Amino acid sequence: MIDLVASEWLKLRSLRATYYVLAATLSAVVLTGFAAYSISRYFDTHGPGGDAVGTGLGLSADLPPVLFGMLGVFAISGEYTTGMIRLTLTTIRSRWTLLLAKAAVVAAMAAVAGQALAFATYFTAQAVVAGRPIGASFAEHTALTEVLTSGAGAAVAGVLGLGLATVLRSTPGALIALVVLPLAPTVLERFLPAPWNDWVSSLTIPSLTRQLAAVPDAGAFGPATAATVLVGYVVLSLLPATVAINHRDA
Image 1 (cartoon, rainbow, N blue to C red):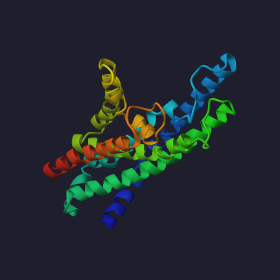
Image 2 (cartoon, helix red, strand yellow):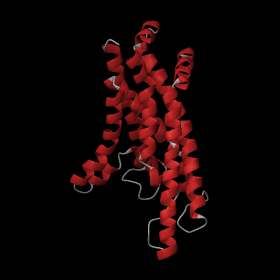
Image 3 (cartoon, rainbow, N blue to C red):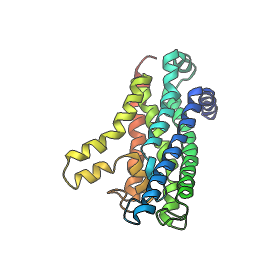
Image 4 (spheres, rainbow, N blue to C red):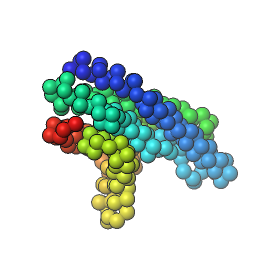
């Protein structure tokens, strides 16, 4: 298993798409900087009463899950496109072990990159706020926890992308699904009465990571429930992917 993980790590590092995705995550930092600047200007002009910047993570929260999900998509979709998956599957007895190794590598890379992105986003937002009382300090317990849980959300998004690409065996199809599925709770909650709308809107990965950090008004769930749902996303991503890779020809 260790050799298999090392092999998958080498594959992921050798993909140019990996570096493109990681570079694209910096767009979240840029977006956060612009949003924080806009909110700060409003504060200077109108005083308190507008939106708060907080940690800054919420200003670009929808972008990282999609980007880290793309990391998971490219981890396997390229092998299906080139046909290299046939060689991989003929050299490995257990197909589910291959999938597990890919998931471990994708989750680890996404978690580390997501954590680094969260700190970069936080410090960018606080630099733009420049001491105005609309930011957040690590002295606040939930601020530090919110940043530290971002890596978990990135890891879950990466595994979700891997599962979609394994089931669909299509890079465009997996990328479209990766954009549509996470938005489904946000769209669905508009048509549901309370409290169902709050529960459904709380199912997005950004909301779940904030609820995992016990951020006030982040959603309808507590940290334990949010952690359970995030684990459920991983399980629901890997189960159909395991069935697909075990019962279909490459």
